[in-house]
Length: 317
Image (cartoon, rainbow, N blue to C red; front, side):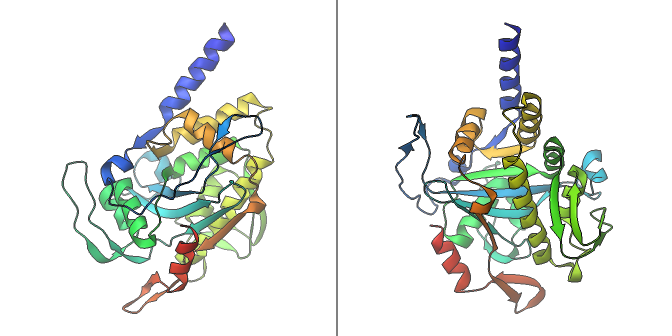
């Protein structure tokens, strides 16, 4: 009875950790079409989703609160979507493509609905990450769909302090860097080479920009993509099912830092998605960056390079 009660409390606690946003309700039908796919069944006979899926994953770099400031978040309030990735899962869920969108990309930011019932104004030549700052997850999703023409089936946001806790719960990650890193803003100093990083160091790596040559956001994206691969390798190499205590610690770190759309806002729905990815390894994941070029009117910003960017997004539809 105690075991059942403990399991029930753990499920209730983890389920209650998850925050959600009704993206579909806010955006309505004015969106790219959703491909029609038919679910199949697993060998055991239980249905698992297997169709192609596109998920917008944002890293929310919170700037407020003592914990975030200690982790290098700065001293201003609010949050910014400094990390944006479109994760495309192929039909069958045996391969995936992760496309990073540089935060400095200049885009047409569409008019977005606000919780107050008002609408933001459309803006051309706006910084990509301004969409989240202005209109939150709803505007971030609409801006990505406007930029790509690809329907985002789901939205997942993880705050950076929670990311550090996740890495610690997994026992750290091993990453190889090609250059020395010395960044006062991200609080990270590493010599070129292979390092096993704890959560704070991994978060510093994800944030590092000014310690890289030219302070380039594209160079930071390369580090973030290496970090994604390292996390996948760490997760696949860790027997979480055989270690209930660590499994709970990882699940608590993930759900405690997670905001999703209402289609993924329960432990059951997240578990179903995880089960559908059971055959996916780090080697099956391709990481790319949206093709960009310097903006003609601002050398410090970039714009999508066509037709390459359009061809990339077409491949994900």
